[in-house]
Image (cartoon, rainbow, N blue to C red; front, side, top):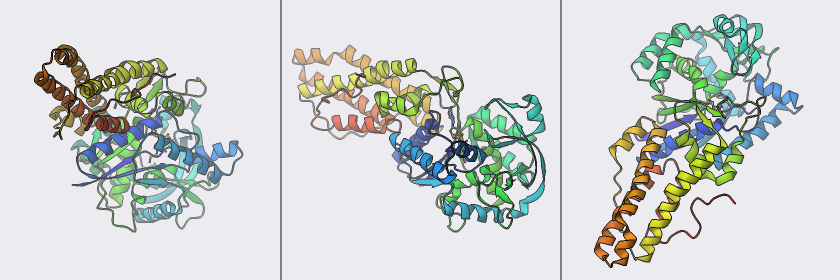
Length: 471
Ligand code: MSP
């Protein structure tokens, strides 16, 4: 299939972008660019989740009209995505009237699986999630992610009969028709699926007005997750447009904390609509700060713009795609970030480019068009979305080239007038560098473009270092 649809989770706009949000964007962009490198047509959705209690309460606390508040924050997210060099093709805002209307159509199509019943139970506004009695007890009534007591709800809601689809979902996940990466998360989801109850999918307007109205019932708005999950297909024009050109998605990128919504409720919605399930869900780990979850009260929240401004985009993407593990939680500290930039990006790669380009330029080395064949191992890691491992693999190659220069000493060959040997040696080294550069291109698009340009005829070393030390 040459058409590839990639999606990324849509963040809540109850504040400015957070360093963790960068993970979704950088990973999805890497997936998108990798597929483009393979010659696929890529459609890539991004967006903002603008409904729900959390956003409503925050706007109220700030005394701002909710729509104005979400407009302002949605713009910050768009700006952030651009700064990260993310090449998305579609941007969805869940307060967009087209999205809202399509959600209502989707609701109507699911009506056979929807019933009304009293909900007596718990809710966490931080997670925007209904919590089972069992989970509430296990956590002593306090949400471990938000450190706040669960709220007791007693209200009439609409329910979605997940039980109608459980067997089909279990089968698709077990057989990897819906592939959940990494494997250990797949196991968690299969376990969770065993006792996942029907889900409440609306809130009474008396409790929450900020949502998509339920069709033909003035007293209810949709539960924020129903409207949010639908974004992946409303942006393609569903239901009025035929979406089979793009749907099912080749890959949906989400954090581990929201995998359960994407691997249970979302597939149930799709099956209820008679649509195929996505091919893959990549569930990434969390970015921690100094070993802890970031929180305003601990005071360890890292501002992504500060990180971006420090050494630029390549440094940002380098750190988040290599040193933040694709699947496991990993730690951000300024020290690790600085070391990675100075010792690896600036020294290993930046100096290598400078050295090779200077030597080539001095000795009149020319290179013709190369056919850059990439190693099988790289493709295999990338195909399995093992991005941090693929990055490590490429970095070994970069270090090998550095070692080879020291070993083959092209400057000595030049000094001794061994022209032919020098030319072969330099061409070999440059070819190796261009292969590594191509492998890096989905991760570091801007920097690799610059490197590619440096090594086209005539080879001219950059006037400024590619990765300068901060002043
Ligand atoms: N609005 C929902 C997603 C709806 S998708 C149909 C939501 N928003 S969020 O703002 O809380 O999170 C957006 C994405 O950012 C999620 O994939 C989440 O996992 C990710 N992250 C938020 N904090 C994170 C870290 N500290 N580290 C890594 N990713 C994190 O959930």
